[in-house]
Length: 312
Ligand SMILES: C[S@@+](CC[C@H](N)C(=O)[O-])C[C@H]1O[C@@H](n2cnc3c(N)ncnc32)[C@H](O)[C@@H]1O
Image (cartoon, rainbow, N blue to C red; front, side, top):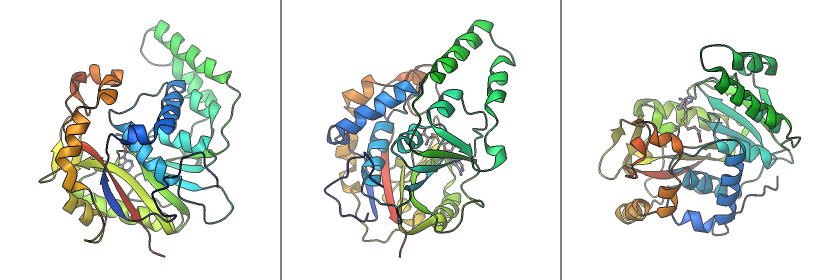
């Protein structure tokens, strides 16, 4: 499948295992992609996690180098997808995305359903559209707020554009993807999701993701990096991992390349990144939870990408 995702010409056709702390230089290197991501997010009323532009551009620049095993659309599993941007971007580019999250998206807002071809993987994974309409009126809350939300949804119905690709909603824990056959997925992507699992669960999750991946396919995941030892970032409820832990948890060989030797230098550049600081999402300012409590720019960790390919 030819995706409008810039291939990273520095890489060979087949992706190679590696660990890469995400440099803020990605923002410039992937500028056209970054601009498209911002535009899509705005049109979907989605806000970004503070480092997500790095995560998304790193993952998508690798996906641009992968091909479907057949002439069929690229089949991508988004692990811990929520309603996050990458699945919508990939569907717009023509991919078939299986969107997995243990949080139910059965009542997915109408704006996503209208713009993208969305289906439940199982019947119970996606409630009928009319139920979403009805639910918008139910429950507590000010009538005015409900009215504004409903109008927002209705205005999205005027958008006649439909994605080339498709998103299958699958409300399921990543430790057990019982409805997905072995070797059926070209690429697994995961944006800032796996760190929300206790370390002892990660090998189970990894094994399940590799089971569904076709031989030669790649798992591209972003997590949080730690320099000296693993630690738990309470406000975002996420684990930060050392290079050694990532090697163990993802079963990566000792000689797999990593840029952890540049940890301090990359962190300094991240802390000084004006573009990310100035574009902090509004939700951070409203809460002491999350990656940037109360919107005070003070990164406590940096994002790291892991690429793990399946032998074959
Ligand atoms: C910080 S959110 C990121 C969501 C999305 N990737 C994005 O880009 O906005 C992490 C998500 O991962 C999901 N998640 C984490 N571990 C999971 C697991 N074991 N099974 C299913 N979902 C999981 C959570 O439910 C949550 O929705």
